[in-house]
Image (tube, rainbow, N blue to C red; front, top):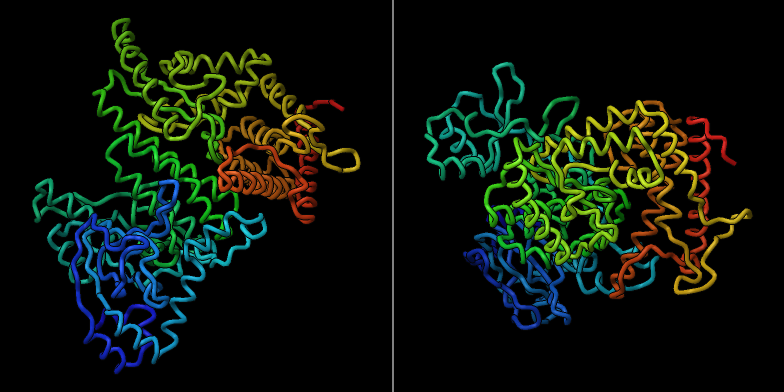
Length: 628
C-alpha cells in the first residue's frame, strides 16, 4: 500500500478508499522485451502502475514506421484511457527493463472512478494534453495550430532545483564498496556522492558502478573511490529541465548533482525528468545507445525529426531544438563508428572524425548534408603511412555509405572523409589551414566558411582539440584573412526592398519564395565566425559565439541581444517550415513563402532581416571596410 499511497492520482484518496483499492491489486513481474499491449488488439482488463522498471509506448502507422510516444518509468501507468473509454489498447507497450507492476482490475478501477471523479479527471486531463493521435493530427495542421498545441511546458518551465527530493546522500572516501552498496540498498537510492577529507565532493558512485564492480570481480572491501566517477557532473539549480536533460544525454549519464552557491544541494536522475515530462527524448536516446547493429541505426536516425515535433509542441526555441538534434546525431555517429571499427579491427593510428559546417556548429535541422573529415596521428614512416591509407580509405567509405542510409545526404562538394583530400594526417591538415589563413583567395574564403566551424566528433578528440587551438591561435593574428572573411559577410543582402517589402523569386519552381538559410541565417553565422576568429574564441555555435562576444565586450550588448533574438527567430521559421514539409511527406528545403506566414510573423521577420544591416555596419567599422 505505501507504493500506491505515493502514486498520483491515488495519493489523494482517503485512507479507507486506498485500503479497499489495495485489496484488489495484484503484483506482476514482466521480463524485459515483453509486449504488454498490442495496439488495437489487446482487451485492457487492468490499469498497470509501474513499481519498478520501465516501458516504451509507441504507435504503429500505416506506412510501417513506428511513432515513438513516451517512456514511462517508476510511478507511471498505462491502460487507464482504454478502460475509461471502453476501447482496446490505443498504443503498443513494451517493457524495456525487467519490470514489476501493480495491476488494478478494470471493475475495481471503474468503481473507484465512479466514487471519486477526480481520478477520472486526472487521466482524462493527462491524455488530453499528450495523447498521441491528437498530437499527431495537430502536427499536420497550419503553423499556428502546430506551435500552439495544448501542452505543458514542463521541460522549459521546470527548474532543476524543483526536482530535488531531499539532501544528497554521501559516503566518506576510504569506506568500502560493500558499505556503499548497503547504504544505497537501505535508502532505496541509485547514487552516493563521495566526500573527500576536506569536505569537497570527490566523485559519485551509482548503481551502475556497483554492477560493473561485481562483473569485474572488484573486492567488496576495496575503497569506494576505486569505482567512483570523477568529477561529478553538475547543473545549476536555476537551470531548466531541458538543460539538465541535454547534459545527461551529451555525457551519457543518468545522475546530475544540483548546485546552488557552489554547493551540491541535491541529486536529480534521468527518471526524475521523465516523470515530469512524459514524451521524453530520452526514449530514442536509449534506443540508439542500446542498438547493437549498424543497420539498426538506419530507422532510429530517421526518427529524430519526431523528437523535434515533441519539443516544438512544448514551446522549445530553435536553439534548444538544434542542440537536441546535435546530441542525437552525435550519438548515432558514435555508435556507427564504434561498431564499424569493431568490424574492421584496430586502426594503425589514433584518429579523429571531424564535423564541419552546420554539424560543427551544432545547428543541424533536417536532412543536413554531410560535411566531415578524418585526421589521424602523423605516420612514422612510409610503411606506416601506407597502412593508414589501407585502413582509413575503406573505413571512411563505409562510414559515409552508412550515414547516407541513416538519412544524412552526401555533400555535393564532396567535402567528406571518404574524399582523400579530407582524409589526412594531422600535420597535413594543420598546414592546409595555415595556407588558407596566410594566402586567402576567393576559394579559400569559401572553404573557410565550412572548415572554420569544425569540432571533433568522435575518436581521439585531443587531435581535433589541438587543431582547434592551433587554428584559433593563428587566425586572430592574420588581418588580411580576417578582412577577406569580413568582406565576404557583406556580400549577402537580406530579401527586403528599400520599402521593406519581401523580395521573392518571380518565376520558376521557387516562385514567390526566398531562401531563408542563405539570405537570412548565413549573415548571422558569418558575422559570428569572423568576430570569434578575430578575438580568439574557440566556440563554434553561432548563439554561443554571440554570447561570448558580448561577454568579452567585443560587441555591444544591445547588438548581441538583437542578433541573438533575430537569428533564433529565423531558425524557428526555418524549422517550422521544414517540419511542416516532413509532416506532408515532402523533402525539406529552405524556400519560405511569406504569404504562408501570419501578419505578426511577417513583421517580425522583417525586423529580423533589418538586424543584418547593423551587423554588416559593425564589420565595416571594425575592419575599416569602406563598402557602400
